[in-house]
Image (cartoon, rainbow, N blue to C red):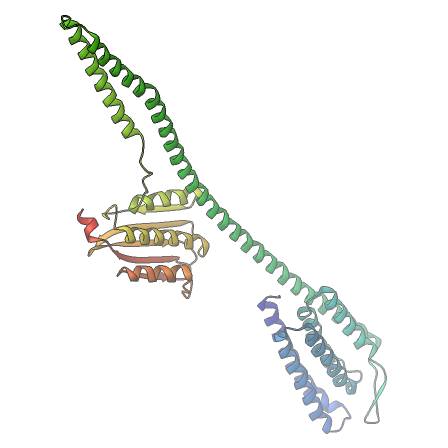
Length: 407
């Protein structure tokens, strides 16, 4: 679909052409030997032509566009019949007609066919005719040549306008596609880095499990056998060998101590479960991951905010920062983002400021609307400020869980 700009230009040309034709008619009517009733007929045809030209931009169906354009050609031909050798009105109206055909018809070959067809039709129609039994003079060859050159230039200019519009539209679509692709790559990179962190943690856990199994199956098993063998040796030692029994007991005790130390080490080395990072540490990891994935400067100031706000408040703050930095690059094409936290009145203030394009009017999407509702459910508030050329500012206050803060 063509953009609004060429359609607006075409409408202006259509209106200007009909106003000019009306002015030309007022100047020329005194020189034409026509009855007065033709004046009203001319006005009727001129208004009909203008109305059909105003309807054309809003036609969605190609067939209806063709009907209106052919109707315009017929009206144009009838209006030009009585003027004979005077081509001023025809030169004016053919400009609008050619531009409309080139701009409004969807296919290039259709536009070319219509423009060239109108051009040839106007030339062929310049024949001697009788109007109200009066012979109208035929335009000279010089006038017909001027009409041909003028029409050819109008066709060239109209196609230039159309091609420029289509090229601009193609460029914007390509730019939008590249931007969407960049966002998908950023998202994929973030997910990949999150996966890499999880994979690293999982690998560390697997390695710890392997080491604990190896130590348990070798050193701990050996020490256990050694203790049992020493106890058996003590039972087999004669009662008159006190020095030997004392030495064996000391050795057994050292083996038991070593076994206890190994078991404590195994307990510390083997993780029960992978700890989940929450609160401000999770937000710090999010910002680092985002910066590494996008190379966009993100300044994070945690201020005097506590490391955790409580389960629900932590998740809400995390989602707010995530939504803020994503919107900054998605909608504002920001290159710098500032995030700051500060404690106030039993909660935390969160400011997210970017240097993106901003907007004249704020239209909340699903993300910000859902975020605002989530914060309000916790008893907090979210305010959004924007100005064209000044980026976006998200200002939120989220109450923390008092029991968590006490602990």
